[in-house]
Length: 271
Image 1 (cartoon, rainbow, N blue to C red):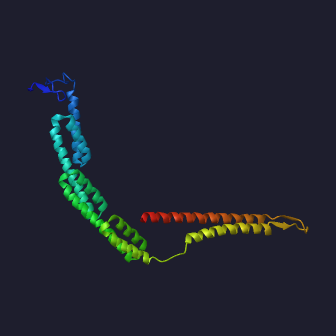
Image 2: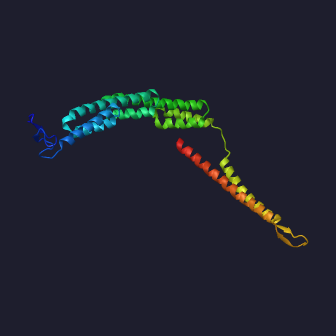
Image 3: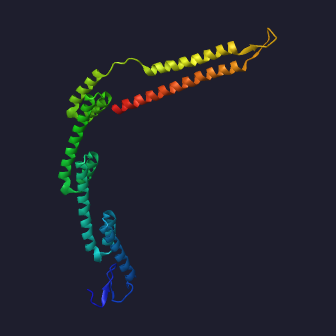
């Protein structure tokens, strides 16, 4: 027990004289202790009033754990913060749901379900609604693409439906077969043709360069019927044709490689 002439050290609970600056046992400086407690509590209140709830909770937690004499008051604010946080999260989840931001809404309702037992049933009901709505939206979008002739997009969406929702797999697969029948039959291999043209261009460049060098690579020296000299224009022209064949062949092969990679990526994405 303490009387009006003594104070109790908040750290070691030793009774000290009323005007003592420090605890006679543990050496705690009462003035510094009180100043730090008041600063922390004021900081916590400022965060709370500015609706910075996470920061406020951290400060009130510190006050509650380090200053038992004001712990009950700090805990009251922590309870208020927890309630406000729960209400804010639930309202944000509802807002996302009502504005058709379904993925964001589902993430928030899952967080609510895991954190707040009193809201678990409500959150799970909304999660079921979201899953059903996402399923319906995807199937409707696939049917719309099919109806408007966007066959590749429709096929991709129906495959997604078939893989994700077993109860709609039969309907989705039926539409996929319909799309396959509607796809234009095109047996022309454009990539194969481009590769053939690339090698043909290379051969043409080599043959053309050889012909130019043989026909235009030399010229007769004026005044001499049998004497010839190198023709620089013919030689340069031959090299130009030769390197043109190499360049275009490489360019076409690179284009073919890019096209094949894009096709493979699209197939993997659809699957």
